[in-house]
Structure formats: C-alpha cells, structure tokens
Image 1 (cartoon, one colour):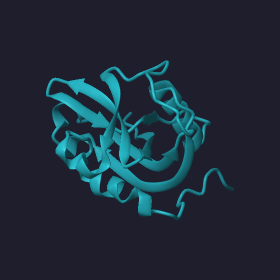
Image 2 (cartoon, rainbow, N blue to C red; image 1 turned 180 degrees about the vertical axis):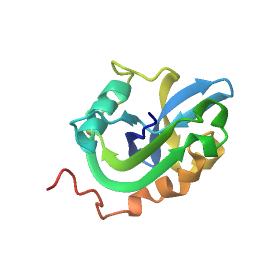
Image 3 (tube, rainbow, N blue to C red; image 1 turned 45 degrees about the vertical axis):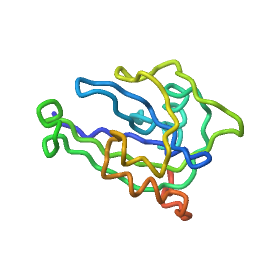
Image 4 (cartoon, rainbow, N blue to C red; image 1 turned 135 degrees about the horizontal axis):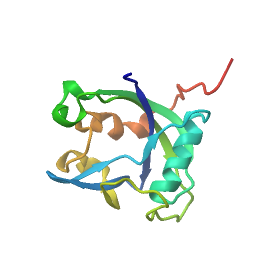
Length: 153
C-alpha cells in the first residue's frame, strides 16, 4: 500500500541568518530546514518540537504556519530514488531562546553532517532544498497570520 508521509519543518531566523541542517549526498553538500516526520497521535507543533530537539538540540517555540509544500518524488529530479515517495510538509516560523546555539541532537538524519547559519539574503547561492521554497522563506519575517488551527473538533 502506498501512503503519504507528513513532515513539519522549522524556519528559524536570527540576525538575518537562517538555521539549516547541513547534509551530504553523492552530489555534495546541501541544506534543508530542521524538522521531520510527524508521529501518530502528536500534533504538528509537538512533532516539530521533538524533531528539532533530535536534530539541532534546541527547544523551539513554534510560531505561525508559513506555507505547505508537497513533494511527489516521481515528478522531480530524484525520481530514480523517490518514485514511490509522497510527502506533505508544513513549514512553521519558529523561535529559539536568546543566546541558544544549536548542536547535534540525539537522532540526527542519516545524511546530516552539521548545522549551519546561512545568510538569508544569499540563500539562493547555496544548494538549498527545495530551492523553489527560498522566496517563501525569505519573506518569512513579513508573515504575521497563523494559518494552522491545531487539533480542533
């Protein structure tokens, strides 16, 4: 049976820098937002907080929903490896405590080789995935309305 995976990602900006996970694959270095798969029974915000603790060892404050991204692997450049992969990602603006610095957490991703602060204005000059999300991330400071309603009845 084919299924859709749900993941949550964090946009953490401090002093014009975006916190990113540094990854390495056959093509070299690339960057992604912290976060990962939501578990059954946890809200998106709970899952994102857990994933950030696991990957960047920080207790984030989850703020407004910035955008939703869908990835259907068979439609993209990684189709050879992702032909049966379908993921929906919700991306939230997040904060970290003043003076807190990220470090590898208890469960880093397999391809994760570090954590790095990237210049938000120069984000298009590095291999950031997904690259089409860069304009949405760069405007994250202008977003003010929270579109996520949470677990409601």
